[in-house]
Image (cartoon, rainbow, N blue to C red; front, side, top):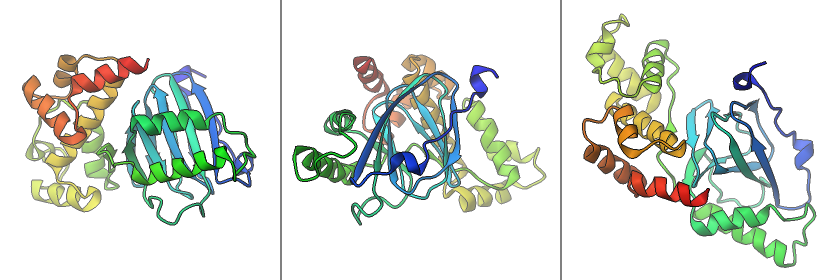
Length: 266
């Protein structure tokens, strides 16, 4: 079996049994590994200290680069792919821990404080003293999970085969600048029909979906070490300034500063 097709089994719920609210694990995966679809009775916060992950669930795909995490509510079926070597740090949270924890999957910005809390949680014993310092640490972590700001790195995936084919082509070649009218020529559907399908199935218009796909691709490319200019061209932007403005608008930081932050973490 080639490295790109190797499978790693997911943790079973028996591995997560604990009387405590929080269970933490650290895993390091080589490039090309894939965890097949599974689900847990506990909520899960996935954080990559190095490398980027792709998380796929029924409602879409999420790119999880360094400095971001993905929140996966209990009972959500999902698969995880590692297009590069990944240092994964994951927290499993008891379903009944807090009633106000997020109900939907989503990528979250990770603050410097949250990063240090996640790393510190890796040293928690399975049966930590819930009434002592470790228990207070767990409560602070739960507080911070509830405060994590959403990041627009969710790529909602359509079920309709016509627009799914278009979506797959754009994801593979995000610099493809064809209009929806151009795409309609090979689908047997009108531009108006495709526009309606995109909105119905993804919640985004075609142009907005393509911009989201380009953002997701850009974050992934930067996480893999590509330069800003190279990434802008790869994503189909006409100018570097347009790419920088779009990236800053969606993620609150320029691509150059984001890439510099990644280098500082290595």
